[in-house]
Length: 330
Figure: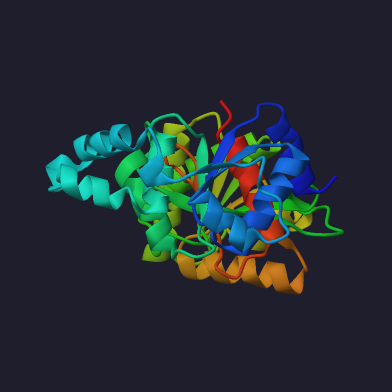
């Protein structure tokens, strides 16, 4: 069973409602149809039904919920709630009404008010425009200081990691995290791995050095200190570092370079020291190893909101809806 199929099965265990605000995109309508047919989540399209039916053409959306913000009976409730959330930042009630006419803000308020469980956007909007409403309205999850992102990498014909499956983070959001931020990324990633795969995370804090094999620099110190922080915050987690990539995932290398480590050679969660390394790393694995790369998936927001690539296909949207639905499960 593929990763996406396994995620869909998990999603079916507790059906969640996911908002798709970019409903005039034909790919979104195709995805909404597929999700509805497969039955692993409920979807809500934000927009005007007549307009969407014109865009949909031969795609049947008659059995899919469509909500027009300005015609919704919840519009006033949402506007008042949004005003209360943002009035300290200069929000007025009039401006709240205008802002909620934008589909993505209205959809995010649906999630905030408990009328939906998660949101998926980004096929049209930029990452900033997708995540800004989430950070303004939903904010970070309790106990979480930083929003970050990850990819699930599924490498074919590979026995390393979790039979070829890995979590890579952060590959999409945080440019140069400090040691505190890096520790938060690691902890969030461990939780995400467990929720999505049901497997125990074995976390490697990546570096170009393994346990002091290279002269100490600020770059290495950051990873060493971040590892210590993770161990202090979550003493039951299997985490180690600093470690090179080969020592992290190849048993024969790990046993030589870090013989006392419980993670070396067995890591399934790889935490990159900065966005340069993370973004380059996932793209190399995707292209050279022909890996399936699922993401970037956002973690650390109070309720799940995920950003699509603007070049995505409808099947990509279906996969992200499934991941978002599982993230929304208790």
